[in-house]
Length: 205
Image (tube, rainbow, N blue to C red; front, side, top):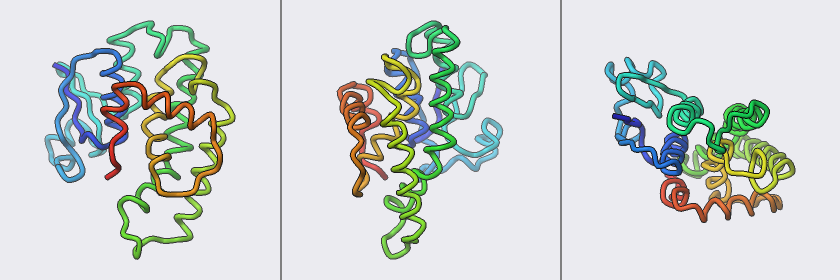
């Protein structure tokens, strides 16, 4: 039995759900984290000592870190699939953008999300928010200039999944954004994917 532990509106949980839906991989999901709590219990910490989501549990095997979960699902359920192919050069290019999502895009966009979505207006730090928005716009513009129809090459890959959950939030923020035509066209194509529309393109909370 394959169970993904984590609430549906978590961007990191969305990644794994979206991938399994795209590949037709059977799974169950349990609500953990946020308003559901549970990440601080001894039982959960025994699975994931970081106390964060998601955590994948599969017949006694336990894995955390969202991008590691994506790679494991591909390797175990769809080896050689174009979404994460065997060609090492292509795969390295995909992995590069997945890591870029976590290290370069993730921190500033998370700061914007926390300020705009989860902080009352009268409690925001305007200077910190402005700096985070400028930095987030800068890194999205970098991707806009580097990408084609997809993030890493001509086809849909794990790089699209790792970054696609975040581009929905970027275009959902009530802010003024620079022109990013490639990014916008990519986002529109993602919205046409049933699994993305159902599991990723949801209101931000």
